[in-house]
Length: 118
Length: 115
Image 1 (cartoon, rainbow over the protein chains, first blue to last red):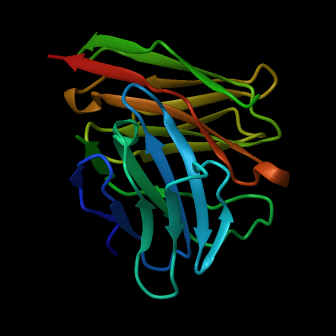
Image 2 (cartoon, rainbow over the protein chains, first blue to last red; image 1 turned 60 degrees about the vertical axis):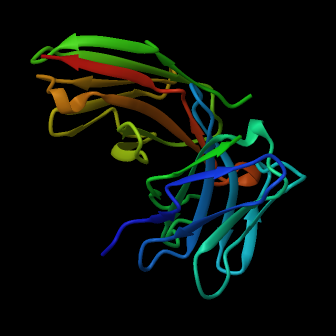
C-alpha cells in the first residue's frame, strides 16, 4: 500500500506563471488536506477536501489559490500568477473517513512539493 | 486564539544522551495531541497521539506526556541516535464546531544529534 504521493517534488516557476501541485491519497482514503510550510515556520492549514467537495477552505488565500479533489484522479492545488511569497513547501495529507463524528482520522503526509518562484 | 508553542527552538545533544522537548497549547476545545517527526525534505510522520484522558504514551525510545489541565505536553527521547536528528512537531487537534478536525502545528524543535 503506497503512501501519499505528491508530484512534482520540486517546481520552479517564474512570477506570473501558474503552479499545479498534485496529491494522490493513500488507498482507501477519501479525505485530503493541503498545508503550506514557509521557511522557518510551522505547517499552516490551507484546505480540506473530500471527493468532489471542498469542506473547509478557510486557510486558503481568497485570490489565485484553488483546490479540487475530483471523483477520479489526484487532488490538485492550483496557484495562479505566482509571486515570490508563494515560495514554500506544500504538503498534502490524507485520511480515512472518521468513525467519530467530531474528530478526523489520523492524517498521513506526503513528501511535499517545494515551490520556488523566481 | 488557538496556538501551539514549542521549546526549545533548536537543540544539540550527543549520541546516546536523553532529551525532552516541550509543547504548550491554547487550542480549545481540545481533541487530541500528536507528536510528529519531520526529516529534512520529507513530510511529517506521526510518533504518538494522545487524547484528553491519556497522560503518557510510548513508542519505542519516544515517550510523550500530556497534562490537559496545564495544557502542556513533552516528548522525551531516550538514548538518542544519529537518525533522531529531525524537526519534532507538536500538533493539537480541535474538536467539533467550526474548527472540526483543524490541526494546529507548532513550529517544531530542530534536534541535532552529534556523534
